[in-house]
Image (cartoon, rainbow, N blue to C red; front, top):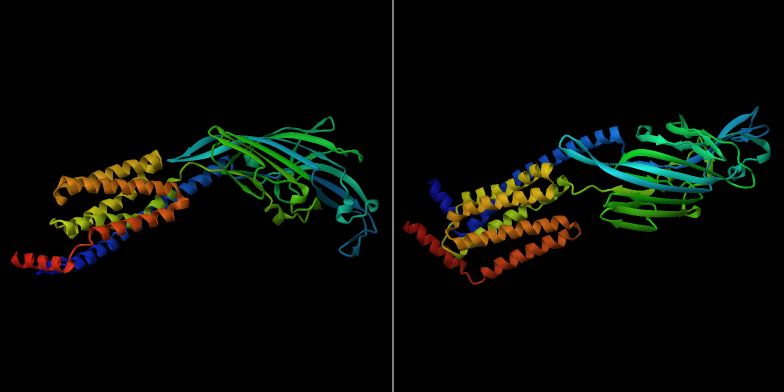
Amino acid sequence: MRRNLLENLTGSQFGRVVFIGVIVLLLEIPAAMVHDVIRERSRYQESAGRETSALWGGSQTFQGPRIVARYRCDPPYQIGGQPTRGGVFRDVVFLPDELVVNASTTTEVLSRGIYEFPVYRAQLAVSGKISLPDVTVLGLDAERVELVDLALVLELPDRRSLQRISTVSWQNEQLEFKPTLAADGSTGGLRAPLALPAADEPAAFAFDVELNGSKSLFFLPLGRATSVSLTSDWSSPSFSGAWLPTERNVHDAGFTASWQVPYLGRTIPIAWFAEHPPEAELQTIAFGTAFIPGVDAYRMAERSVKYSTLFVVLTFAALWLVDVLTKVAIHPLQYLLVGAALSLFYLLELSLAEHIGFGPAYTLAAITIVGTILLYCVPVLRGRLRTAAMAVLLASLYGYLYVVLRNQDHALLAGTTLLFAALATVMFLTRNIDWFALTARRDDDTAQA
C-alpha cells in the first residue's frame, strides 16, 4: 500500500518535481541550524576580541594636546546675567596654532584560544606651536580677567593603553606630564604646566607618545593647521573619517598616508569653556584608518550558507535531468542523501576555517564533499560519463561560489547569472521532450511491474 502511494506520487514527472521541492524545503532546516552555529561561534570570537582589547588596547583616537588656561574673573564681571561678588576662576580650552603628528605603527598578532587578533603599537611624535590665549574670542573682557595658570593637557580615554610618554619640550625646558582630571571632568587626562609664552610670537612644544591599540587608529585635527602622517607595516588599511588622506601609498610591506586639515575645514571653535566641551562636534571630525584583518571566516561562512538552497536546487536539477533524459530512475531517498552531504559542507567548512583559514578550509571541504557525492553517484547514475558530468557540475559550482564570495560587489550579478544559465540549460535540454508520452510510458511500466 505504502509502496503504491510512493509510486503514485513519484510516477509522473510533475509529481517527482513536487517531491524534490519538498526535499529542498526540508534541507532548509539543517541550513538554518548551520547558520545558528555560525552566529554562535562569531559571538565567541567577538567576546574573545573584547577581552583582548581590554587587556591590550582597543580602537584609539588620538585627541592631540589642548591648552587649558585658568582665568580669575574680577568684579563687576557677570556670569549668566548676574554680577559676581568676588573672584571667579574659569578654565578655558584653547587649541594650538599648529599641530603636527608623525605616527608609525608596528603590528603583531595575539592569540586567545583558537582565535587570533591583530594589534598594533603606535609611536607618535607630536609637535606644534602655541600663541598666548586670547580670551576675547569667548566674549571675555581682557582687562577684567587675569591669567593664573596655563597647562598642556592630553586626554586619553583609555590610559591603560599608554606605554610611554616623554617630557614636553617647551621654551628650552623639559616639562613632565602628570595624571589629572580631563578638561571635561572625566578621568584619563595628562597635564603638563606651561610657562606663559611671549605675547608677540608663538612658542613651540614637542613630545613623544607610545600606546597600544587594535582595530583602528584615528586622529582629531585640534590645531588651526593640522598635519598628520602615518606609516605602518599593515598592508590592508581602510581609510575613513571626516577626511581622506591627501597622499597615500599602499603596498605589500605596509602603507604610508598623510592628511592636511586647515582650520576652516573643521566644525569646532578655536576655544571653549572647559565645562562645556563640544563633544558632539569632536566626534564628527576624527579621521584615520582601520586595520582590516584577513578574511573573516565567520562572515564568509555566513555568506556561503546563503547559497545553500541554490546549490541544492542546481544539483537536484542535474540529477533530475539524468532521470528525464535516460532510463536511470533516482529514488527520493537518494536525493535526500545527496542534499544532506551538500548541507554538511558548510559545517565542515566552518570547523576547518577556525583552524586553517577560510581559503584552505573551503578547498578541503569542497574536495571532501564532492568526492563523497561522486563515490555515492557511481552506482546511482550507472555510468562513468554521467558521473564525470556530475563531477564537472559540482566542481564548477564550488569554484563559482568561491569567486562570488571573494567578490562581494558583484555577488548579486553573479548569482543571478548562474540561475539564468541553469534555467536556460534545463529548458534547452528538455525542449523536445513529450512530457505526456513520457508519463504514459512510465505508467505502463508501473502497471506491467
